[in-house]
Length: 160
Image (cartoon, rainbow, N blue to C red; front, side):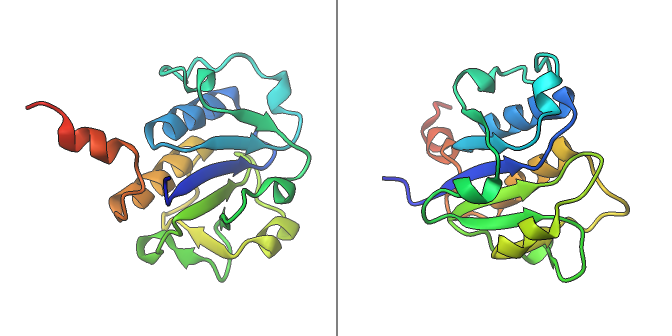
């Protein structure tokens, strides 16, 4: 049984391009599922930026409230640029994490950050788009080790 688990929550995402890119990143970094709230996404076009077709194997599930779908044992982690947030550069990722991201054109509501155990931010000048933020957080999780990626074993056994 895997000791690590990661899933993503998207609060009212807007852009089909960004959602496609989020799904691609989720597939690349071994995310288990992606949840979203809101209805703007439902009006979007197909995800042409998901070139690896992660949507075919990775659940993308519309929900009313992200708080209601936190997987058992997962630590809810808000990714938001607000006072009191911890810098991602020094953050220790939990083995079982539920990363929650705000919309491309807004921020997470206080009612969401209030139920999160941790709030982290990426120290940048200005804000990044949704897909870029997801990629950076997931890469940081992988880069800091603890075998958070299912790809690490495959890379070790790959023929040279």
